[in-house]
Length: 541
Ligand SMILES: *[C@@H]1O[C@H](CO)[C@@H](O)[C@H](O)[C@H]1NC(C)=O
Ligand SMILES: *[C@@H]1O[C@H](CO)[C@@H](O)[C@H](O)[C@H]1NC(C)=O
Ligand SMILES: *[C@@H]1O[C@H](CO)[C@@H](O)[C@H](O)[C@H]1NC(C)=O
Ligand SMILES: *[C@@H]1O[C@H](CO)[C@@H](O)[C@H](O)[C@H]1NC(C)=O
Ligand SMILES: *[C@@H]1O[C@H](CO)[C@@H](O)[C@H](O)[C@H]1NC(C)=O
Ligand SMILES: *[C@@H]1O[C@H](CO)[C@@H](O)[C@H](O)[C@H]1NC(C)=O
Ligand SMILES: *[C@@H]1O[C@H](CO)[C@@H](O)[C@H](O)[C@H]1NC(C)=O
Ligand SMILES: *[C@@H]1O[C@H](CO)[C@@H](O)[C@H](O)[C@H]1NC(C)=O
Image 1: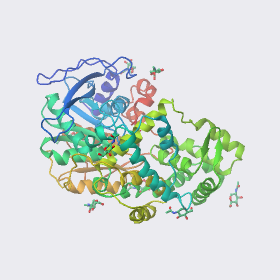
Image 2: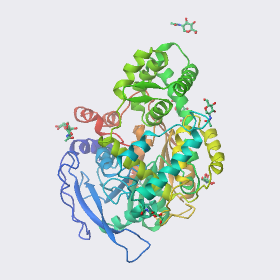
Image 3: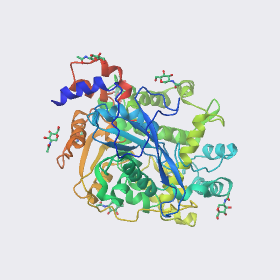
Image 4: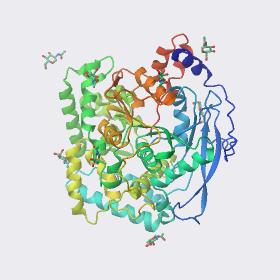
């Protein structure tokens, strides 16, 4: 059957409840998920797999990994693909359910998806830094720029010391912090493979930090690898061995400039800033001046202060996802050239005050604790004194003007983190996996530059690279027919892209969605997929 024909059938069968095949060798009892836990029309199932708390001890206690499975529309399936959407600190099961409609089409509907929340996130063994809402408020309310005053960096360092103390002495970090590292999560993935009772091989699709997890699993268990896609690649060497994920920020300033140049190229219909008779360079310069103004004179908006960190935080988030760019350019036009009254009116609806009983606020603290617990526990080196950290911050500032003063925050915490993961992958990521892996990324990615994809590919013998000339965090955030074909071919029969080939995606202000890609490939039935515009998106937190 042609790709177009099978895609059409797949798109119209996605909502049909498939009765999943039960592998006779599976030890997992799949059943309904907890009532009300997930709000989805997908035919999801839940189950558990017992795993050791501490893989280094044969007599370790065990706990149950909570799994969710989204069965393939086409049954019997060709096996299960495990997922991770990054962070670290983000739970995986919710992201799996949100992204499954997209991933199912890209894998031709032939695979089941299976996800569990990694240790330290969501519904599993947690890391509890503090349950005292006073400290939660202090920690979240004190996320500052490292460069909004002469003393900011030193103060940020003290924040790192303090938060480590809180987690170790006032919270329950001691109970779990050593057991939530990436190497144990990689072992959990293999435990899930064993429990699934398929062919004993790992299929995996990881994004952002999920690429570090995937690279670690593939390096620890090369003989157990069937197919693995790593999309939006982190440099895993730096993740474990450096004080700062320098390379992650290598293209951030370039993508920030691209926000303005592609705006002018798109024109005023698509980008409000293009209507102002300014060049891209002038717009960017004016935005840097806005940052300086907010550094010196933060705006009070209702119950919150809108300052340098707030506007930087906006860009850290928006550069990931070009669907937000038209709205961001509109907001920026007001902030740059509107009156203060207009600026307040535009910012007001965006402010969600953090209050102690706000579930978003607690979720955000859980994410923060998970990020420290996992990333900082995985990091091998520590710094004893503030002075030792200065060269690291200098190099960070040289790497990215946009990101350096917000990225320092992770560093001050990890450099002083009280715990080390019980197990850390200590190899060099030079491995030959049983089957070649596929590594993917965008040329304009402000969080995981394409050079990191090349770095990882150099170590994994036989691996291929899907390079997308698109914008946003991870290749899947820049939809294109070419990357669809590439990904479908890899899941279909392991075909890798031609070395040096590049997939062309639409411009960042074009609003081109996966729904448009699928509609172009299956033109006879436009009604159904176009209504599902939101369903075919990559959801990253
Ligand atoms: C569940 O999702 C539907 C569709 O997105 C939405 O209308 C509804 O409000 C949601 N229900 C809950 C309880 O979140
Ligand atoms: C955690 O362990 C450290 C080091 O052993 C100890 O000093 C600290 O008191 C412990 N924290 C709690 C809350 O028991
Ligand atoms: C646009 O800017 C140019 C050069 O600054 C100026 O000559 C021109 O009059 C401006 N046009 C409008 C419509 O403002
Ligand atoms: C700190 O901010 C000032 C003022 O914008 C800037 O000149 C300087 O380069 C920044 N330093 C670092 C380390 O980011
Ligand atoms: C990958 O990155 C690490 C850390 O920056 C570096 O030491 C190593 O040389 C790089 N490897 C390749 C093949 O570029
Ligand atoms: C990426 O796309 C831009 C705009 O279409 C084009 O100018 C550039 O040559 C492309 N780069 C690559 C490597 O394909
Ligand atoms: C793999 O699948 C692709 C897409 O369906 C097809 O074009 C290609 O010929 C197949 N390759 C092999 C070796 O079967
Ligand atoms: C088009 O999609 C609709 C809605 O899912 C479906 O009812 C219809 O049968 C489809 N038509 C064709 C020709 O596939």
